[in-house]
Length: 413
Image 1: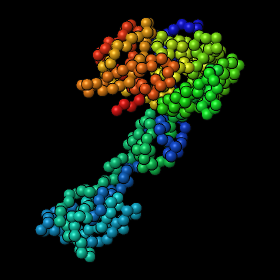
Image 2 (image 1 turned 90 degrees about the horizontal axis):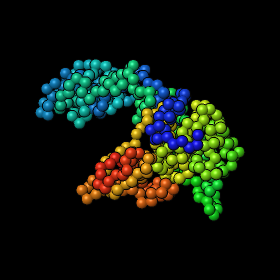
Image 3 (image 1 turned 180 degrees about the vertical axis):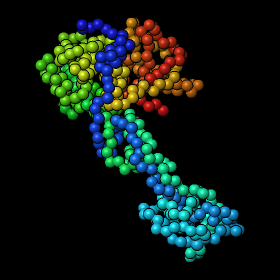
């Protein structure tokens, strides 16, 4: 079985058909913990917002008809019957020819149907002169204007940000039902990899992938759990993978998937349970040795050790799975149109993804230029690339000056 290359489209189809990724179960959490979580169900308001007619300005609550005809040289004269404060029910009723002092947000007292702004009035003791007429409901926010009782205010599947959580608080809620966050175990393999923070022995490199992939998991809506660096030893790798499967909803490994004698991951992953490996090599560049397995209902993505390859294949194949497991919609990468700054060649028979950075051309249009170090193992490629260009299997090259679509890996100004 190792290694029958699938096309890129076949690999994606296998993921959809065999993994069948879907949202995890629900849990109820505090609003203060709900940021960036995904709603499990529609939220229906149990009350009107605002729950009473309220003033939108500082001024005087009046009967609108008492101000008709008021102007600068001929003000309407009203008697002040009291004060309405914010946060308490009115204790007065406005009768014909009367006005009640009111502040922004306070409830409109009985008998009043409009509010005159304080700057359009002049007051002397209990006598008020109004210099501008108001119409009924002017400067009044009516009960239920913002949210009506029984209205659906948030939909299942919405991601909760500051404004959505504010809406939930306005409804008087303290808890909300959300989808559980998929826990993704992240581990690296290889005798050449050392965890950051430790002394770097000769011939070794620090573990880049665990940190970039963990961050990518978090960006996708998952919760990464870093399990460290596992040496190229069958027994240790098996124990680590079994622990990862027992403690997480998904497993993400990097390294150990090529065809060398110490590349053990595909065989061990395939022995952990049925159905086992469903993708073992993809006709793409970079990322050819990518392996994907399913143990029960839990997916295992085994990505190449090269940092750029690992992160690219994560975005192309693993990110959508995590989004679906977290209840989020699958979001495609943002794209921009650009002109090829040079000729870009494909790998024969493989879908090729060329890392590029973007710059402004003479006509102010965007130019896409391949990142200088085209090797997938180059660490700086991660920082230099703004996005990537996709060349189909049946296309030999992209020509200089050809208009192309660049899928963005980061926000580009």
